[in-house]
Every structure is written in C-alpha cells, then in structure tokens.
Length: 223
Image (cartoon, rainbow, N blue to C red; front, side, top):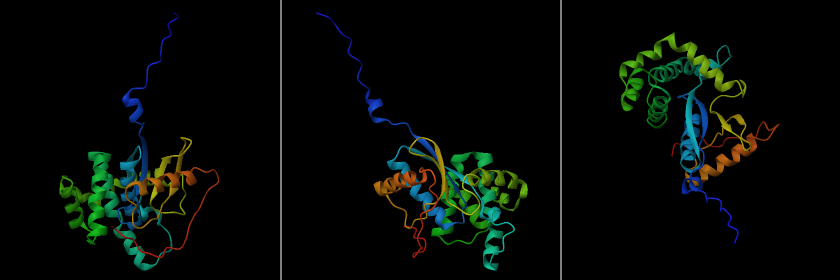
C-alpha cells in the first residue's frame, strides 16, 4: 500500500479570524454630518473586519479666504478651537485619545447642544480622563502647522470642493480609495451599517465614479 501525506486542515483560527484593515476618517468636531458618519463607522467596526481611525480636518482651514455668509464666518472663527484641541491631544496622548475625545466633544456639541468654548472643552477632556487644562490649546496657534498637515493629508485625495466627512479605505481590489461622505441620517445600525459600507466601497472603488447625490429633505438625526 502506498501512503500519501494528507494536507493539514486549516486551524480554527484560520477559519474564523479574518485580517482586519484600517479605515481612516477625517472629521471636524463641529460638523453634524461628520458626527453621524462617525457613529455609522463605529457600527461598521462591529460587523466588518475594520478598525476605524479618526483624524482631524478643519472647516475653518478649508474655508479660509472664501466669501461666506456672516453667520457662517462666525462659526468658522469658533471652529478653530476644537480642532486645535484635538491636535494637541493627539500629540500628547495619541490617536486612541483623539477617538475618545471626538466622542466626548460630539456628544456635548450635537446631542447636548452645548456652546463651543472653554467650558465645553474642559468638560469633554474631563469626560475622557484628561487634564482639563489642555483646553488652553484651543486658543493657541502652536498647533496650527500640525493641524494644516492633518487637514491636507485627508483632503488631498478628494480635493477642496467637499468638506467633511472624508474617508480613506481599502477598496474591493485592495487599493486605497478616498471619498467624501456618505452623508446619512440617521446612522444605520448593525448589519444595515455593514451593507451600506459594502455598497459605498463598491461605488467608490469604481474607476471614474465621482458623484451620487440627491436633495436632502431631513436635517441631522442623532439617534
């Protein structure tokens, strides 16, 4: 009788653990649409093999020199504080701290409707176990160079005709794709979040695809 070596079966680990990939989102804390997209991505993280990483862009930087309505100009002036704060936290405590701070800021800004300012920043820092004195960073231009570099890294692949959210993710063929959006309300939950993610990557990864849009008939819903 001739004996043959039977190939080893895949281990349970090989069968059940897929390789996780990084998906990067650029946010400005004051944008309600970015906040909803970020909550969607955190849902996606639970149902797809992705790890979400958050980075800072700035609507204040994006809109420098543009002719804007007076009310929006005032918002852009106040918008420097939270993004400077996020950069300071990233430099001193790392990206995981930024992720936590974004949740704390967004919860107070968008759900709590709290006014932008030092009191809000100090409270958000306290929420995530950081020194509230870091709120001083909101008024410091020392972080602007790093802020602009982070902004540029996120916006370069998608251009300046869009704002936030911006997402960079591996497409269906493994190559990185970058896109603005999706703009959604409310954020899908569970497997519905995963299906939207699959579809977004499919269209964003199609060569020559640029836009899919319809008129928004609802404001942000923070469910």
